Length: 263
Image (cartoon, rainbow, N blue to C red; front, side, top):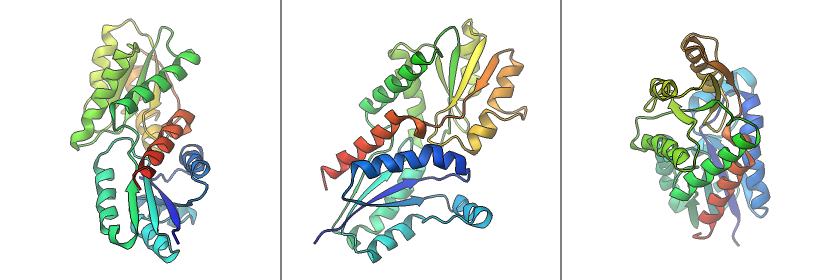
């Protein structure tokens, strides 16, 4: 008798408002799409898990704990769906743990992160482009999307994403990462070449947590908002993580369903 489980894996956030707005909607979307699966959740950041437990008395599984719980519950077939943006370091580490538990279940399949195939980039660009267009963000202003950035080779995903925005006609959308290339200085070079005076900042991250609130929208002189304001731009920051967009939730659901097809 098979018993099915779906494990939703996120890096995590210590900001509960971001969790409620941007992680929980993804989980609810997956629950609705897999009514015959028991839903489990794990954060991969032990630091965030420790903060949540110590400061908020809020406990979640780490990845290994989630697998152990599924074993105790008698789960036989597992879908693992990450909420990662790219298949980078966190995704690699997740896959390593998945491999350690492969023999404990009849089947384990893993869904892709947000950006994996070319069609994912097209879908994300078109979905965000429609949102920006419908809400008036494309009229005589620039949009800067703040990504995380990584030392992993898949950091090139951010350059591919910006190129995809260009190819789909969104010339005024720029990508700037916190920890890698392209960075804000690169975005500024392009902004100076245009006639933009107004800039809207959005996080290109699943949650609008610490990076979005501080590195992007913070009042510190090193934040994206402060740097752009010092350059003379009229800047507005929007703390709307990718997890809030129903189109993004739908793409994670599609990835999980694609994984199920090979289970």
